[in-house]
Length: 276
Ligand SMILES: C[S@@+](CC[C@H](N)C(=O)[O-])C[C@H]1O[C@@H](n2cnc3c(N)ncnc32)[C@H](O)[C@@H]1O
Image (cartoon, rainbow, N blue to C red; front, top):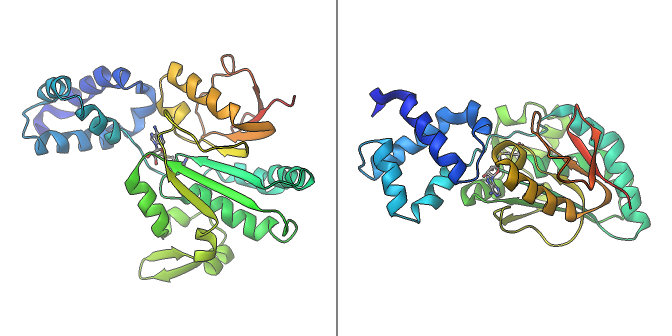
């Protein structure tokens, strides 16, 4: 199997990704990781080749779900894309918080595809250190969703390696994490600020309207365009007018097909829902 090299796996991916409505280009950098997982699965099933696995997939409809799960890429870190976090802390969040306070409602944020919690916890930390004093009366709700149960369990454990914390200001790190051996445990007070839910974004989304949505390195990156359009349109329908959507670097957004939103900052991949 190893001798057949990456080529067979790449051919296999080219065939199955469209069936799963997933985007070949999105997997370019991570296909080795995906191929390793599929090889392991082929080994567990005692099959001989990618071709045998393709036939197995045809004859076992539930295997499609297993393959879909193997396509989840969960790379993340705290304060990933640091400049967009600066913009959030300095400009976007204070403005959104002010508006929510004026409208006498909570500030609602959603991290879609939250992996092991790095993104929603970054937001909770930013709030604590930059905004919580000024907006002490404003309730903040952070909802985080992911399709992968293992990722959500890790998020709830909230224990990280130093590598994923490299963009964190040192005083925030010292104040909010407890170091045990090589691992850093996040304080309960920050953990309790985030509510995690298992949801497949293709099928369901959290209830209510949001002021801020993170959908980084998921829909635009991995979903084929028709599916991305459908999911982005639903996300935008869940946003208050004037609210913000943050995507990952280099992720395409189908602006022509999802017309209720405009580019707010192209370089930082920040989009704003049109005000009505
Ligand atoms: C690359 S990570 C992105 C993590 C974080 N948003 C970031 O940018 O650092 C993508 C996450 O999306 C999750 N995911 C993949 N497909 C999904 C789906 N259909 N619905 C919800 N989450 C999904 C994966 O499990 C993974 O944790």
